[in-house]
Structure formats: structure tokens, C-alpha cells
Length: 198
Image (cartoon, rainbow, N blue to C red; front, side, top):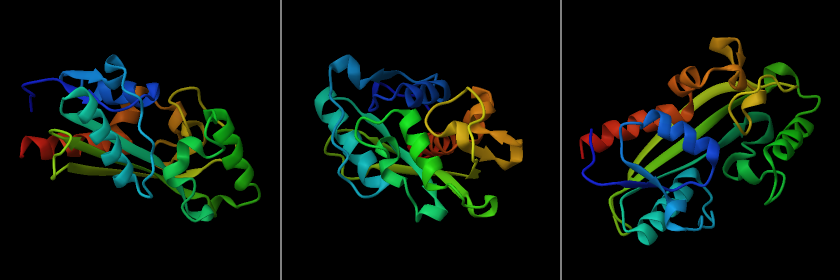
């Protein structure tokens, strides 16, 4: 798949940007920050709603096609939390460390077999701000939550997300391996395939 014009990436998260650019390295991506676009308020109650809000905001202000994602961690023992507020779980201005601390505190005493969780990523492509038919892809990465941090790679909840098939945390994976397995990698590959058929 190739694009005839640039596509704006609707994200201000450095970790997400690195992963998306690594996977879509052959595409002509520009960041919404290059247009001084502020991130929109994520008022949706689902990953799909928030991804569309972000893509429409970027496409409108940049006058370009846009790709946006909304993703988060869903923990079964917490009834799906942190979910769509994963990035702000410990508060609006929470750091990754703050969010991790809150998650581990909430799961304190929960046995290993009940700490099942998954990362979910919804990726959206809009040809323009008023595109009535967004291309929507979803990736799901199953694992469980550790009771301690492990690894220095990645970002967000990676240090406590155990990847059974690799026998390590997400933060202990190389970027190449993580991108081949992760929710974001799955969603991006699915999105590009769907876009090529559009």
C-alpha cells in the first residue's frame, strides 16, 4: 500500500509515535504537533469513539487524511479498568509511574490466576474530517499483570504486563518482537490491509 499524500498521525504520545512509525516506516507520516494541533478531549466511553474523535480533530485542523489510535489496558479483576482512561488512571496529569503504582495497589492481594488482562488498540483512518466511513481495525494482546515491575523497554504498563508466550514482561521484549506481537502492531497491520482494499 502506498499513499499519494501525507497522512497525519493524531497522537502526542512519544511511545505510541515510535511504535507506529516503526511499523509504518514506508509511509509518509507527519505528526499533528507539526501543525500545532492540540490533542482533543477524549470524551468517548469506548476505544472506537475516542479514536474517531482524535482522527477527526487531526484531519480537520491539518486538512489531511489522519490515523489515530485509542488503546488501553483491560484488567478482568478490575471489571475492565483502567480501560479507556488507562493514560489517566491515577489522574489527568498522571505519569506512567503513577498509573503503574495505582494499578499494583488496586491488584494487591489478587492471586496470579485472577490477574488476567489484555491490551486493546483501536486504529482509525479517515480520508478527511467529514469521512462518514472510517476504516476501523482492532488488536488484542492477552496476558496478565505481574505484582512487580520487570524490564526497561516500552512505556506505559509494559513493565507489569506478562507475555506468556515469551515468558517475560512486555518491557523485556525488543521493539521488533513487541511490534510483531502487540495490540498496536496487530491493529496497524489490519488497518493497512483494509486501507489497501478501500
